[in-house]
Structures are given as structure tokens and as C-alpha cells.
Length: 56
Image (cartoon, rainbow, N blue to C red; front, side, top):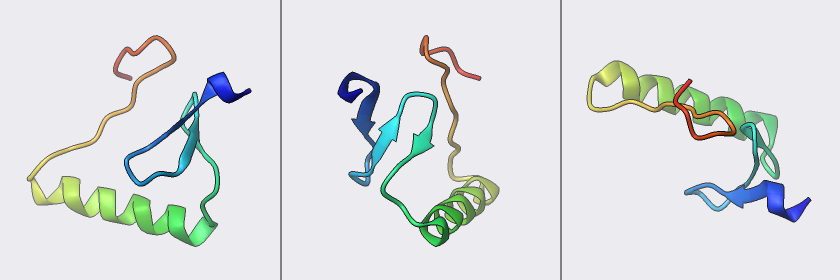
């Protein structure tokens, strides 16, 4: 199981496939809101990769 887990930039455990663990629902919703606002600002963007590292 540990081989399937890594930590994101904030130090939260992330399971392969993008499932966040160790965060409350409110924290996840706030994170998504901040990400959307950042992308909408035109300063940058986020993307996801699949299990093979290919951008989805």
C-alpha cells in the first residue's frame, strides 16, 4: 500500500489516481476553489496525469 502513496506539495498523502487522504471535505473544497481562481486569473494552470504519467 505504501508504494501507492506519495505526498503532494502541501505534505498531504495522495494515492495514485489522485485520491487525497488526510484532508477534510472543507479543505478539499477550498483547495479546488483556489485552484480554479488561480487558473481563471491567467497566471498559470494545473493538469492531471494518469498512472503512466500521461497528461489527461
